[in-house]
Length: 174
Length: 226
Image (cartoon, rainbow over all chains, first blue to last red; front, side, top):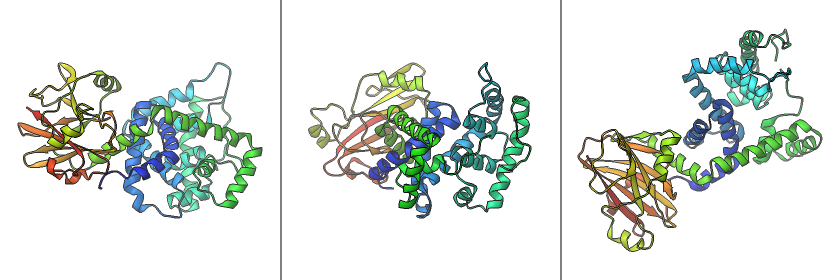
């Protein structure tokens, strides 16, 4: 690659870097790691641009790369991540207050299989519809639903143990 | 666990601000935003994200980091990137001192007002300091290149050994230490770091000697010795 295409990088920074940095901080919980991951993500984005489909949403595509990168980093330190998940679920303010939805999702990610983790982030954090997730991942709607059910099933046990007073829906439909 | 209400989607709000929505989607979301407190909070969150990025990772640092990582992903058998902790990085940043062992003739003319266009800091068992002329470098020492581009837009740095060259950096000409340190792991007794500062983009892969640099570029070489 002859030098770095600075105008392209400037546009990527202007439009997408804030979202990617926020995603890295949200998942990694470490500012230094998040800064490093931010750069790694855009290296991957620059290398993957030839594979980007013109009809896809750049925001969704880039945040998927960020999410995938961070989840891989977290998986590489899985034991620590699990310990943190339990603590995050247990630590609350003295007066009962439901934990922030996104924090809870993050804490529960480690209990779910790989693809279910990504689907959970797209659904609960990015708030894509199941159909939109199917398009983003190249998966059928039934597969997306199956992955969401997997995430909820894996989460339920951990939630019951950590938050016995939280009312959980009995069904596993998201 | 609350499921988003129909019409609420943080991703849709992101896409709105990234200019990715079609006209009808955009109009729908604008109407929705006026009435939806939840999505208004999302807008505020996005603004907070932008402020955090500008504050903590300004574009120059971002671009330099990406450029360096891109260069690092190319094969570099003679040195290894080294990511320091923040404390070590800060220690390196505060060290002063400079040397240019063998600046090119045109470099000296162009840079007579600005001083050394590049310098190397070393971090080893005895601490962190600017590398002195002729000072031997330990095998496990961490090295960090610092640039003083003097208004030049682009920089490239290449580690030159007798039979090989490896790209250290290729990107915007940042003023100050490059974000990523490296170790010189080559077996040779001596190597040179060729630094090219230019107003045009430089293809670092094609830099194997000072003579490969663009004609109007600032060129300097720094010598590494075991």
